[in-house]
Image (cartoon, rainbow, N blue to C red):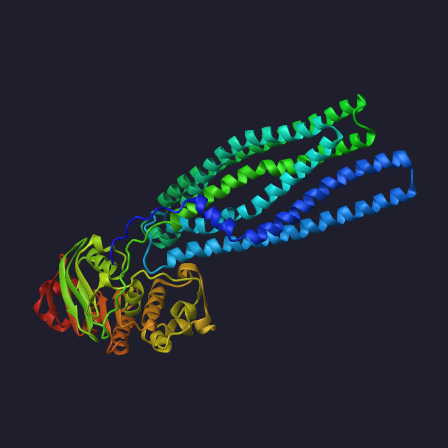
Length: 566
């Protein structure tokens, strides 16, 4: 695997363009229907003015009946066009938000992690709130166009009555939008900062939940709560700022719209008084002055929603445009399952060198926990190649030359703090439902005791992060999942630290039996696991200092005896 060239970031505007481009059909239909709705609303007011004029002139029952029929058609058109227009747009909006949520989630589930300076809680906020707000652009554009249609129809109708009324609407609309577009930029910047602070607060909550038990153990829960409170307070203050800016924006928009409607009404009254327009045109002008406040309100709110959508899209771009930590190779390891570490230097590792033959069960007794974590991180592809020296070979092929998929297929590293997901025991052990080693893995990990405790058995519901399981139960569940995968090379990191001595002894024997003929490396200080291994490697000060069976090391190496004897 090689360090990638830094790609050009995908900006929020590009994300918005993508969303608009793949929803052109739905937006076109939505625009037509919502434009029809707005035109119908405008026509309703115009029709009322014409009805008044013709009724006063002709006083005909037939004309009145036709007018009522025309009103019924207009009202029906308005009702149906709104109903189906919003249905089309909201379906497209929801579908687009789903696409971006899946896209963001897929970035986090790729075999090679992305170089994103965001915590899981922040990514969660981006995948939910920001995805929804970005997809709102699908509704914003058609509503913007339909509102423009309504204003233009009203301006034309008023212009036909008197050109001064039409010009007043057009000039007033342009002035209103000019003022509000400037204000909307402040909303976009404030909203982006608010989203970032809310995301940080969410990340802090996720961290606290993960470490809640240890925090209670050493009495750090109050300090942790104080830390969260500070972060949450910052988010609250920014939210108040955004609410204040939105309030000013909404108030200004309402005042300007009302001012334009008032100006149209007063101008129409003056023109009627001067004899330039008749009574029917006056009724129409007054009605349109009241009506255009709604599309103008909608029209004036659109710049704000556009800026909010762009701010959310910019945050999504932080995840979607982030480069991978490494660029995987394309090779595949040779069959067999050998593992070779040659001169590995990373963190506390100082030229680590050893080899595990195919089908061998090797235990690594790491005297320093940090060295064990550094070793596991390299094998798990959590460390980019430029961050360590030396070579790791899987099946005779250098790790840097292999594709991430090939590494995952042949090599599984199960961390000591393996994540437990909300679901059931069954879905945690075998998420894909394809394991051929499922019963054996449950038995080997001694998870049978946990299954027997609940009448639902393997279908017992597990809460998020295994909150309704003990530490030992979570550890055995994680071990069962690793064993069920039946990887060609399995690396276990402290798989039995939270279980009692008797269970630990049984698990050690079961692992050796189940993994017979498959390459297994266990980083552990457990005497039971060390004794079950074919041989033990002593990792001290970043290098291998001794190698033998567990029992021989106990009798010949005093430091080893002190480190692992319980």
